[in-house]
Length: 188
Image 1 (cartoon, rainbow, N blue to C red):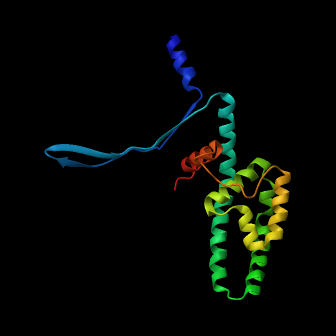
Image 2 (tube, rainbow, N blue to C red):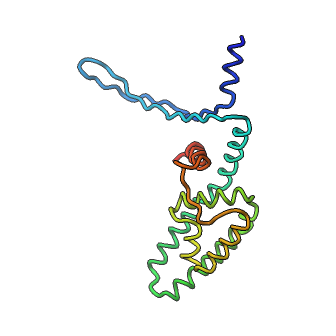
Image 3 (spheres, helix red, strand yellow):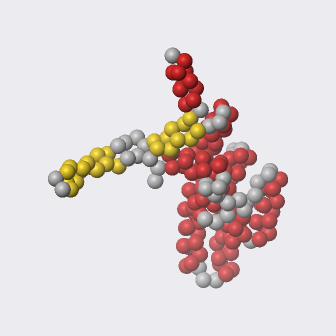
């Protein structure tokens, strides 16, 4: 009985992610041997050192689920803007177009983005980089100019964020957790 509680305690701080289905496909016959083929779902095991790490993971999960749709919309908007800018030939018309689009985006998303917490804003900065491959600072600099980028960077620095933050799931533990959450919750 005490071994049962020991096992239960050991696995109480462990989270297991796995796919929901196991599909068995046709079989292969090689030298009169029948071999069934199947896809084995990937199993990601996250081990937490203590209960606080587990709580922090679930907080991060809630934040990523809330913020990730904004990053996806940003990617779509940037792709559309780039397509439209390729069509426009004159520099002055391009500036006018980007100002117009910036105003529309500001009107559309200001209320929703104001509801984000400081931590969610930091996660959004990382996820925008993940989706677009460009830092938020560089996006602002390219479309709104260096002065706007500088102002927003100064504002972000006041809240201990950096618009030049990169997304690195290999070397940064939080980014690795974010990647696992996205793969599990937003299957592609």
